[in-house]
Image (cartoon, rainbow, N blue to C red):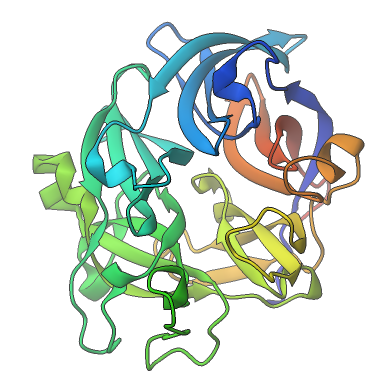
Length: 356
């Protein structure tokens, strides 16, 4: 891409660390969603990891001083694995929530990873107050013969919703959903292999885009779980994202279109079920066309944020910055991110002075 991405991230501080007295946080607090409650306060919805890698979604009010996030006040657990498809014989969890306020629905829409009997699968829930969540169920992809695979067989993570109606396939009004399928079916059935669509030349995990019909969603939000038109959006390009990429927070509306923060991963994964792999997660950004978010118009060549502090370099998984939420406070935008799969940090997002 020849156009620059005129934005920068400046790390501020570690915002949330595990409470040593809370068994729900024994293995970390990380990768939060976010939203404004009916009281106007800003909240994070962190992933809370209990011993045995069982995850729940908590709620924490963001404490602000001098118009910057400086801490949190915990408000308990708002989503826990309670359905049979969120638990397996040896695992359970609701993980890595991402939330989008959708004005046309008057709802917060959460996508989250349900760690069920066959591994990770993305599901959707909605709320009016960030406290009570109504499960809509797992994502389902309509069969597309052009892909020559069943997308419902594959683990999907890093799913975020574009908050406004956009132009979908054939010009139809749609809600767009970004997702990251992983083509290694050995993660689901031992002995299988990478089995990407016949149209995919590069099997590395990449960002895809799919759609839900806007009229159907506006009539019944559960239609957000029924997706069609899935196609690749962006794959790894730079050395710092050579292994895989995935979407971060829900895209932000900016003058240039939609700003999508994403993570890029480099290194080697010997055991996908282990936290002990030689990997490095950085944060970058791309700009998507305002009317047609399936079109990438610019990407960062270098990371906007790299693991450099002790809290980012040491934890459950070393060397990780993982952006998952972005919110405005006054005139500024702040990005909340996971640090080494153990803590939560905050950075300020700025438009670069003098950028065209």
